[in-house]
Length: 100
Image (cartoon, rainbow, N blue to C red; front, side):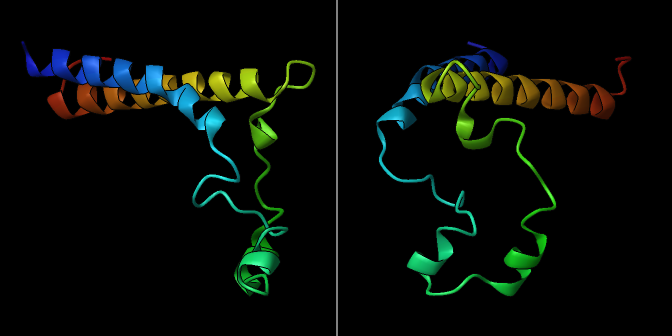
């Protein structure tokens, strides 16, 4: 099997495994907000407090209004995978010198 086919198979397996995150309790590692730091650390880091309003997620808490968090979670995974594929494809085209 070609190496690229192995990568597609691996990506497909990861896509099928992504809903496992729905079974996890709590928040994902590194996705903490300013409301969670006081219980974890006892304080909110100054830089985080200052820049916390700089970015608003397109799908806060992985939910789509009216559809719930499970659909939003799966949709977010699909959008993320599509973006990774597009960016990787574009970088590959640029590095190989082929036209986009």
